[in-house]
Length: 306
Image (cartoon, rainbow, N blue to C red; front, side, top):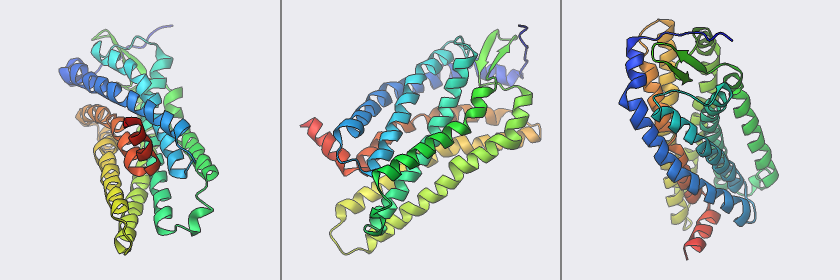
């Protein structure tokens, strides 16, 4: 079949061939891969095999560890792509899978962290009333719904072409340069709705629930110093995850599509590609969420270290 030829601005050419995208980004990905894969593999084994009985929070964390592990195992494709001057050699299908995995991991993480915050809120504020709702079966059903939601959300990325051949540079890009017709669909319908449903709404819920947890713990006269400390650390960790790892990607992407409407510079998309790179660090921070969010996990880690 005839290959369509695409041409990009000089600014984009410089960026695609520059050290940020061909050296810095793959170096970050390599570090994330080295750190996150062993940590999330250990977390998956702990929550899947060692932690009994299965509590709702542990089930959410097991799913989060699985999402991070699956994502981490796909990172070598991105590392190779970036180090080879942004030339994708693995075919169209694998490009779509890896691209969808990036977004699926981010939004699945956001939804699962929201699930953990709701579970913690019910456990702290309504400990007795919530016992019937906070069953392992309910947690499994919620996790399944979150996976279906995240996977259906990335379906457009799986069915639309993500590779483009740039004849000027003689490279095939993967998701870095978009077909103008596809971009039109994305900026009008897909990403604004996607970011709202999968980021901004969960962010509001998560912040509200953790605020309520801290207020509830502060109001108790019982000796809950360790619980208060854990709740504070969890709140800070989750806010760091949202603000550092997830917020830049979603905010910059919204700015980028607003700029596209006004046909202005594509510099915001360059910032977006870098923010995607920073977002992968969440895979290294999530194990801290497991540790401080689960006393069962803390006991298992202590037993391993003994």
